[in-house]
Amino acid sequence: MAGGAYVGGGGGRSYEGGVTIFVLFTCVAAAMGGLLFGYDLGISGGVTLMESFLSKFFPSVLHKMKNETAISEMAPTKIRGALNIGFQMAITISILVAGLVNFGTAKIKGRYGWIISLALVAVPSLMMSLAAIFLLDTLNSILERGNPDKARKMLKKICGTDNVDEEFQDLLDATDAAQKVENQWTDITEARYRPQLVICILLPFFQQLTWINVIMFYAPVLFMTLGFGDEASLMFAVITGGVNMVATFVSILAVDKFGRRVLFLQGGVQMLLCQVTVGVMIGMKFGLSGVGSFTKTEANWILFSICTYVAAFAWSWGPLGWLVPSEICPLEIRSAGQAINVSMNMLFTFIIVGLFFFFGGFVIIMTIFIALFLPETKNVPIEEMNRVWKAHWFWGKYIADEAVNYGRQDKVVV
Image 1 (cartoon, rainbow, N blue to C red):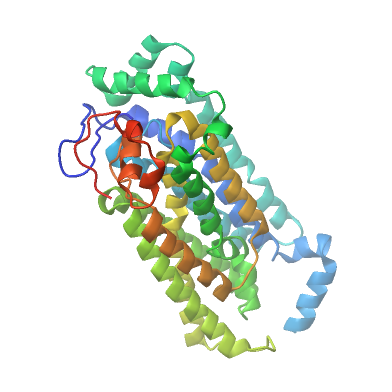
Image 2: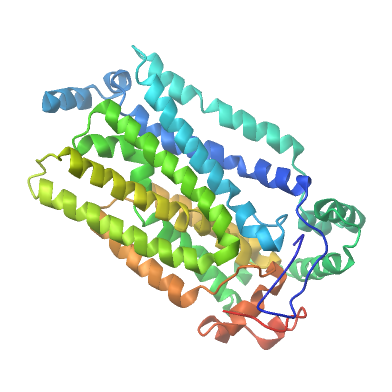
């Protein structure tokens, strides 16, 4: 890891160097994949409300509606959380932009509105492709291909200093250990990697069970179902997208100051309260018949509760669901761990359907899980992560003593 490192209160290892323009550009460029993902997520719900789109592909739905209404390797340890959340920040920015695009193109007569909305996905795709041209290999990748001199030169560029001997040696040791692994997929199932495997599976599982995709993907449809007009529904989707972006920025500022667990736990409690509030209000107004309406005051409370929910997710489970799995896996199983994390996330993004109380129950489960099973990883170098697992009340039994002898840490706080 480039930059400073710290574990516990004292005796921690500290590398010389700081945050360079090269590191910032690399993290921003790598995060641009989030622009494409977020735009796709945000544009879909709005397009499905456009009359021209429905008349072409789902005329029966339109008729019914009318009748009824009538990544981590380059990041310095001390700010690793903030830089890694750049991917989530890119997602939230593009969701907001998608909401604004939908709001504007919905006013265009004929079929061109939804065509423009969908066609503009080419913009983040082009940005990501251009940024990829300037991305360089990571240090671990260079070392694994047998180019230590090139890796040392790259490390100096990342740190902005020539004094990188200690950190470079740590990287060499970690790379040597990783190269001894014959099959990551077999190794990650071993007992010594049980903490990482469980976290990489359950964090994305819990993240998608928060109900957030119902909000982000179908926000316009949801608001219209609750009795708001087409234009108001699109505007409310823009509002929630704006809250999502601002709250993600809050996470960037807070994650390396307060730690991952604090944000996880606080976000879980806040989301639960908001889900119960919205669920009770909808239940009281619509009941079993599904027929009802909100007053202006009640509608404002619904919007406020949903925005508060989105904010809680955006500074906790949203970015941290990606961040934590990316930083807890040692080099020898990192690719497998990340593949599991992303695969689980996409799988549950695809299959998630449910109601407010259903997801509220899972918020309780996932918040308890974080409280009991996830140790704090703030300011912990990836190379020293085994010490954190060893000190944990539950995961410690899976970590052999020799696994924590690497490094020179004196104190670990869990």
